[in-house]
Image 1: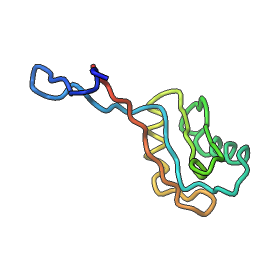
Image 2: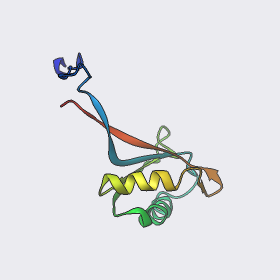
Image 3: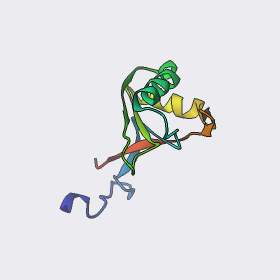
Image 4: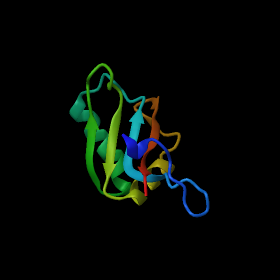
Length: 106
């Protein structure tokens, strides 16, 4: 992968690789005993006030249990949800959320 081996430098000497916010939020520490459809519905109702949701991905595999990815239509909605729900308890557990960043190689 030659394109990813070394960061390119811009005219001012700064790296051209920059992290930009993405529309996807990663949630962890979710109730792992909850049915998949019930969890998706609850997450949808929790995040809907912040903007249109395109998809919620929850898997019940051993590695992905208690985690979800929430895909918003735009970055502003995902950013607002991340900021507004900081420290929020979800079914009695402290929900941990992260924004997934896109790496811009331009």
